[in-house]
Length: 152
Image (cartoon, rainbow, N blue to C red; front, top):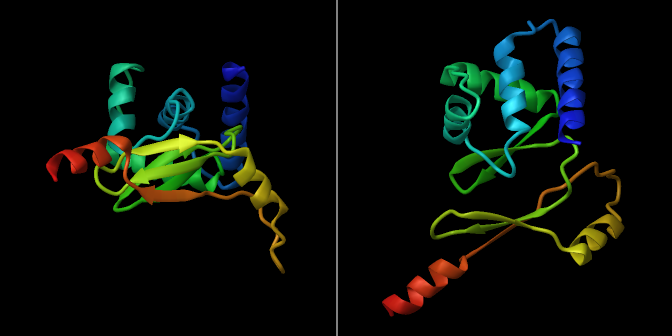
């Protein structure tokens, strides 16, 4: 299944590049492949490290940033702003999920809640047709709660 998804996103990228007059470079496809090999969220540093260690493929930060922007425009990557940090995740065939962000350590956890999903789907948004959504819940993770209790 993962290979089928990777083939599909490569095709989507190829069509996007052709339609918009961009070059089809090996770096762009390597970055896309790496992103669709990573589970969950990542930042630029994590992606650079992953590509160097796992894929044995090195790209410059500038190439990575430019390609991420291109992949966002192509609808293949989602950018999240968690506090003062940017994180990304793949968007194609990605199940709707929610995020819990610890305001102390910055840890981001994903969770799913069917009741929340149904409530959002059933919401009537006057004059608006939603295509997707993100839900962020800010608070303290269990480790930070325990640390605060210990320090009191």
